[in-house]
Length: 222
Image (cartoon, rainbow, N blue to C red; front, top):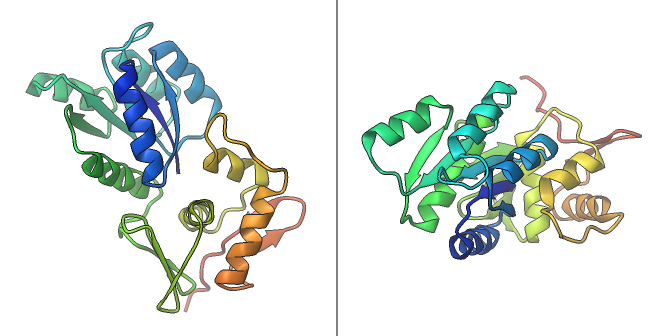
């Protein structure tokens, strides 16, 4: 899942980017509020990690602008402002969660997974569909009860398709959800990942909608 980190501290921003990548996220990082607003207007992120004390435009101003535009993107405020009033202001301004620095990377990732899951209408922490069980926390996939080894990109693609089950996603939409800035994308990367998922899981799992994109259908009602 692709997330945006807005943090002006270079050491912390670099650590967040590296740590979240290691945990399976694709990460874009900007260091001021104006750059954050620009990125949010252009890219389809799964979640936003937002510092409050930013140059150019404050984190609260970024958040207010995001909500005025009607964007329901999950927002996790990550800040050293730790008073009760600060937390109330952040949440009442449109944040979905609030985490105080210093923090544990594992807790941050767990909170991100919960926000992304709920924003997709998923209550359970494990995604289950068509015999596939995907556990984002354990980074494990099982098919018909058997563990299946997937690459990081295959795992991310399957997670997006499962979270968006019933919706056709184009190749461009999938690339935007899987790749951060500066990551090289082969012209047939999505097709290759889909091919591998079909081979490792089931040939019928992912449906190609010719000329449009790919679909993981909802199961037929009983």
